[in-house]
Image (cartoon, rainbow, N blue to C red; front, side, top):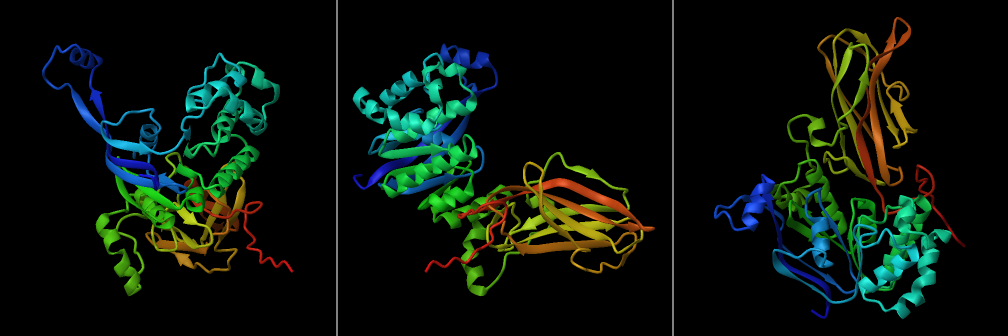
Length: 425
C-alpha cells in the first residue's frame, strides 16, 4: 500500500428506489416483510489504484458513477460493499463550497474548511495570505458568504481547496469555474501540483484537459469500470460510447484492423443517428430540396462529435431534391457558442460544378479539412441554396444542427492555431 495514494477495491454503491414515500416509511418501521424497493447500483465492483505522484483521470457518460466514486474516496459517502484505502491528506474540489456556512464571513469559512480538512489554526494562518490573494475578492472576504455572487463564491472555495497544500488533490469538474482569467490561474496552479509530484485524481468532461494532464485514465460506464489505460486510447473509446458505437467485440478486433490496414467504416443506418444532434434545430427553406441526413466523421472513420485538433475530419450531409434545380450550392458554417461565424465554405466558393438535379435525386456531400480550431465547443450549420431565375434562393437550411467538440492539448491565441514554426537562436 505504501506505493499507492488511493486504492479502490471491489467498491459497490447501491441505492434503494421506492415507488412511494409510504413504502420507505413502512419498511423503516418494519411493517412489511415484502421488499418495497428496487435496487440501483451507481457503482458495481469497481477496482483501480492511483500511485503516489500520479495524475489519473476518470471519464464516462452522465450517470456512470464518476462523482459517486469521488465522494466515496473522500468519505462523503459510504460504499455498500468494498473498501477504499487512502494514504495521504486529501483536499477535494467536488461541489465547490460544500461545507461552507452561508452565515459566516469568507475568512471564517476559510478557517472552517481548513479545520475540516485537518489543519491547525496555525497552519491555516500561514496559508491565509496565499488563499486571499488567489481568491482576489477584496474586502468581500469580511462579509457573510450569503452576500457573494456565484463567481466570488467559487473563487473563494477553489482558493481554499487548492492552497491548503494537500498530498492528494481530488477535482470534480471544478477547473472551469469563474472567468477566463481565473480559469488560467487555476490551470497554472494545477500544473504546479503536477511538478511538485502531488497525487491528483481528476474528473472532467473536458477531454483536452484529460489528455493534457493525466498519466492514466479510468473509463466508467453505467457504474462499471469499462477500461483503463493511456489517455488517448480511453478518450477514443469514450467518444464511441457517446454515440452508442462502442462494443467490446469491436474493440477486440481493433489491433487486427490496424495490422491489416483497415479503416473503420460507418455502420448501416443514418449518419445523424450516430452523433449528438441539437433537439431544437432551426430550419427554413422553400422545400425544393431537403437535407435528410448529416454527420461528422473523425480521422479514423468514426462518427463522432469530438475531433482532435490537428487531425482531418469530415462534415457530411445528404440532400434529396423535390424539383429540377441547376447548380445547387451546398454549404457548411461553423460558429462559436456566442453565434459568431468562425469558418465555413460552400461548393460555389470552392468552384465545384454541381450540375443539374432532377426530382427524386439524392446527393451526398462531404467537406473534409484539417481541424485547426482551438479546443472548445462549436456549432455547425448546413445549407442547400442556389440561384433560381437569377435570384438567390434558400432551398433548405439547418442552423446549429450539431456541435463539434475540439480536443486540444495546446491552445494559442484567438480562434485558430497558426501552427507557427518558431526558431530561437
